[in-house]
Length: 466
Image 1 (cartoon, rainbow, N blue to C red):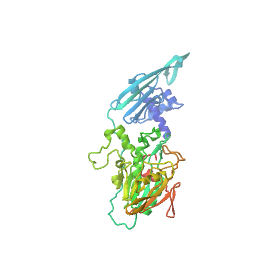
Image 2: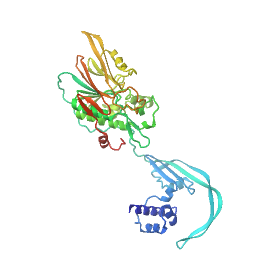
Image 3: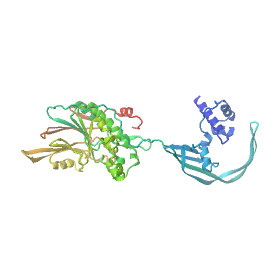
Image 4: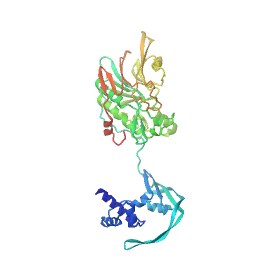
């Protein structure tokens, strides 16, 4: 029945067309053998009910496509040779659309020349038609571009995340023994958008993040450090040629990062959570200073106390999550004690262990990222009261290492890993870490396995091709 109604609507629309199509032309145009059936459909169609656009004219090559505040129309028909005729064929509402530009193309093709006279007599076609060989026929194509007279609002390419998490800072309380900081490095939140289906392929490994979430829920650390390059921002880079697959991937990144941060906040209510700025996060302010300096540092009149509008701490709504931002890369230091600092780092040696050794020159223990490797090194420094041991430590990265990352090769010396650092005010330091292999990790004698989180992400953040 649905097919019958669709065919009936096509017949009615074709008969109502101002081009004046005959019943036989209508029957041929919609694939029906009987033109009388088409006429019966038309006669039984409810008066005043819409039937849509003429299928014959649209099939002949007319189109009208809207793209936000812009539109394009094209008609390929030897009978349509002017702008006014295009506007009539495509039924363009000139109260809504204004013509920006238009043009006509004409070309010649070979065609059979026909002469004759045909007319309908008593429901039958009568007359004669004579073919006089081959000749030349003119073909026409008319196009036009339009803009809305009253523009409609278009959602910005990047807008802040909406975070529905209720959190209050915990009351200060004394903790016996060492404090503990859980370390997550180089998540590289970002995407490639596949050309064939716009599927978002993540740079960040959700399996590593879910394992980290489970361990934090069990360990309840005092501090959770996202130690830089939490975002990749491939589409903001001014150093490399941007692939088309990076275009318009900032917004889904802006939404997914606080989705994960909210889960860490919900499961570790008493923890201090800090996100450090790495060299990749620095791409956003650098791009603004280079290409749109007037937008750098702008704040809304009613949000002067919050970070600038076009900045990651504001876009991620960190103030709603009780998450701190350690900016100022490469000086993004978070001091955990007078003898221990955490920072993203701006050094990366090709030699295993080389990046850790380079951190020892500071004379204090350093938790670092940037190298995407598990590294540690120790050294003795002279201090008041005698020699002291300092440490440099990185647990590895939380991004994919299968070659999908921009500028990364599968055989690069990267390791996925997570770490927990215990420390005291007087400089004692002890690190525990684990490598994450295909979403599995051993921690405290227990095997942690990542849960499938894609369904949760799709449910909580609908409308994106995760």
